[in-house]
Image 1 (cartoon, rainbow, N blue to C red):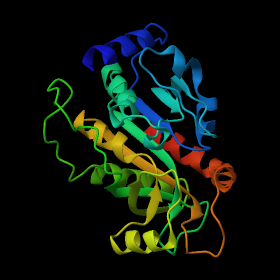
Image 2 (image 1 turned 180 degrees about the vertical axis):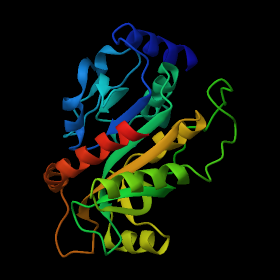
Image 3 (image 1 turned 90 degrees about the vertical axis):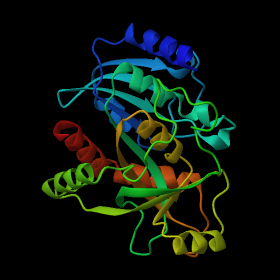
Image 4 (image 1 turned 120 degrees about the horizontal axis):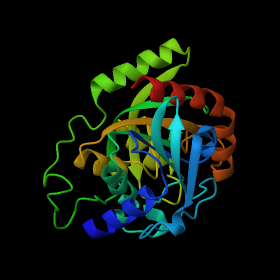
Length: 270
């Protein structure tokens, strides 16, 4: 895998002008942030060696390099999911490439279903911790010591001091930012009401079908992680209505103004 990482990173390096400090993964409906990047260099995923393609509505499938708030960044407009049929190492391959390019901080975003009953669609939630309910881990198999340790510590997957800094930024920007635990599930079917009751009992506040493998790979690579969920709908059984991906996209569109303000402020401050 190391040679594939180096080949992909070398291809991207030839396109971009400087080493990125910050990486971002933009979830369903949240790719609008990439439109604000200065001196943007956009590369379709299919052009990058060993990259798969994103197949989900709301995921553009582009790698964008440039500057935001004076900082050098790389952004993924859309991610890869286990439910698309990709192996977990493929899903996390872009994280390995970001590390090779020099990224030190990853801002990972997603659209999630709200489990905590105080949440409402359109809320933003700072991820305090996660639960891996995907039955997958990107570190299974032979460990390549050059990528990270065999048994990485996950006691602060989302660093407490960094989270406190993000909360301070949100307060300064007058943005209400919830906090909670994100649970990652395999998907692609939405959860049943019984499953949501179980997840709530286990301590989950929001549920989604991404993020957890990426965070594990990032921490394995010693990249600091900031996780932000856009609560796009209430999870099954909380409201008496069906769930749909169209609702997810519609809600993230409504929440994009405060999402953009928050992420832009974070980039400028961390």
